[in-house]
Each structure stands twice: as C-alpha cells, then as structure tokens.
Image (tube, rainbow, N blue to C red):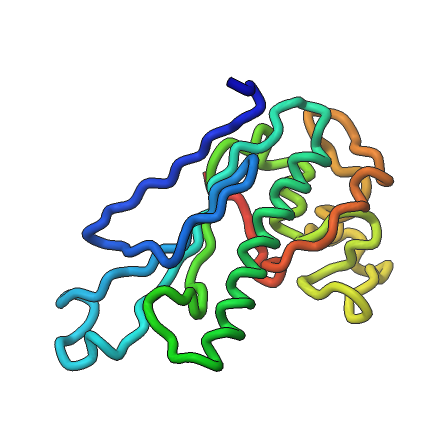
Length: 198
C-alpha cells in the first residue's frame, strides 16, 4: 500500500441525520453534508413534508504532518473549503431551475472542521487562515477580500485582530516566511470567523 494514503471517517446517528448527496473525498479530507431528520420533537405533523430541516457540513481532515510544511496544510484546508463552497453554489443554482428535494444542500446551517490538523491550533498558519480567512500582510481586517478589503489604519495596529494577521505568523516556534504564506487564496467561509474549540 502507498504510505501516502490517509483515511478520514465521519460517523453519525442514522436515527438523527440523513446524508445529503455523496461525501466528497480529497487526499487529506472527507467532506460530508448531513440534514437533521424531521420527527415529532422538531416538526409538527402538519409541516413535516414541507419544512426544510437544518443541514451541517463536516470537513474531516488529516493534514500534512511534517512540521515545516505549513503551506501544504493551509492549501489542503483551502481546497476542502473551496470544494464545499463550489458544491453549495452549484446546487443552489441548479435548485432554482428545478424543484428542490432532499438531495440538495440548500442553506448550510453549520460548518464543522474536525480531525488531525498536525499543527498548534492556537498559533499556526492553519488557525490564522481559519479565523481571519486569509494569510499574509495584505490580509486586511474583517471578512471581505478584494477591493473592499480593509487596510490596517495605524490606530488599529494594537488591536487583537491586527496582531492576528500581522507578520510573522508563528508555527512550532518559528516565524513563517511571508512569501510562502501569501500564496494561499482566501477561504470562502471567512465571513464566519472560524475559530478553534478544543
């Protein structure tokens, strides 16, 4: 067997959730979308067939383990989140032209990232990427990218958010090189401010 194959698995109670479409597999991640099942506890009998139940996307990762491969880890997160965003967008565009059924994601009510990130979640390129939405000096503040991204005014340089995005980003006690950090595109869920809970 190829030692580079990494396995991720996501388990759920079939009595509580239904899978929405197929799970999406990448080399280092598994993305599964689940929808809460309608039952007498969360939906009355009159609206059971009409109400769209909440859905959650679970991105289960086993990121690159080499301590110096922060860029690969961050790119692996970028690709997994990008794939999910494309799937949601595509299905929402398709559902406008056809009737929506249980196989369409619809609006995501939650996003859960789990697994082995192989980095310190308090101080790393991955944690900064997830919480701020992008990396590098040009990251700006807030969850907007492009022409509308905010440039850091001098009065905000002492704020907690500013320190979170200013160079250098530390990982395993080392400052990461700016040129390697800046080549990662922003993730599509940056407006949500994904933070670590452990």
